[in-house]
Image: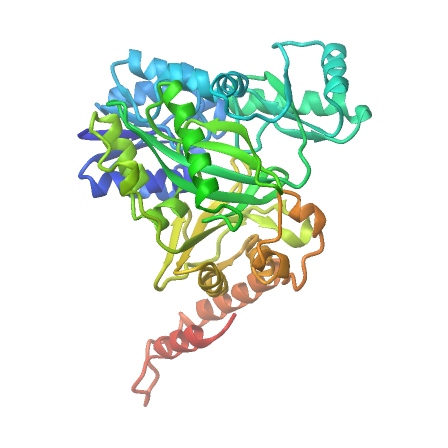
Length: 499
């Protein structure tokens, strides 16, 4: 096993990897930009190394700076987390050429599967169904791209060849919108992945987004850990994930799992990855793409299987065999993850920035929070809006939903707006509770009922309370004739107050 790992990422995933390192007795080193100097990851890591100014191109996407930091601190391996350089084959190759271990698939497997067009070709060769689409050469002219789009028909999706997570993706309803969408998608793809190439894909009607978690070691063993339902999305960004899916029975799970393992095996895949599918109302499934990295929503699978996917990533990268076979995989109960973002749902999910004045996480049986922030942290606009992930487990879906509703109610984040009110409203929606939704759910239900006020009002209440506490802090700890500190009394009142 490695003695030291450098984490080439930030936010909650950096914290998640640090904790896995600590569990395995590995020294953790993290890189950080100037904007993240006071981040939770920097506070928790054993070592931290600055790599430049806030823009990702000058810091978290700088391969040279990250590899130099790993060599300077004598790390043996680099964990890329998700996003940023995690699916960049050039980076994976550069890490290996520097004498370090890339904790993820080999560069050639990333090339085969991380590139969406190549992955579609491989799926076709393995007889895995794919969504109808068109490949576009790099630097394709606008006229040629438009001609291809008309052959495919509208509506369609423009997608980044090297990307994932909804970045570099645009839905195009009509011909007149195509040119501008093509420029935006290509520009965003170049910004996030360093590759502006895109391709076109037919937009399916009311599909469900189902993904399969896979694990593969260097000894030819490859297994799947079941599905995650990721259909609740906004602008192609997942907001809530759960497992098992209400539409996936044992037979469909077996077929999806076999297709995912076949694809990974034929690509010579190593380490953790996710194969994504679209499933229509008749339970036909189509290969969508492979994310050659850890997923944001991996805790859902961890809660269901009892496995630590990050620790398994490290063990596989260190040359260990998978500790279990396909028949050993067991799924227990139901798990749901809500992504807690710094966005205001009452203002069309406009990003929110500023200081987190109050931060209090929920707790209790079956409740897990993976977070990258703390009380007093300044949320900026340089990076994505993910603050934390709230994951709840229950013996069945109804129990998991009930527990998630309780946990959301307990979650206190004041000072900035968050999408917690959105999740609270979603979890009370009839269609969600009945499992009647697709990737179009939020387009169909634009006005969710009982959407609570944005974070502005509770933030103001919190600010008033803090001002009062600050005023009282100037007073003696206990007044004459009192046997109990005013602070203790105030703390008790605050603990009972439902704000």
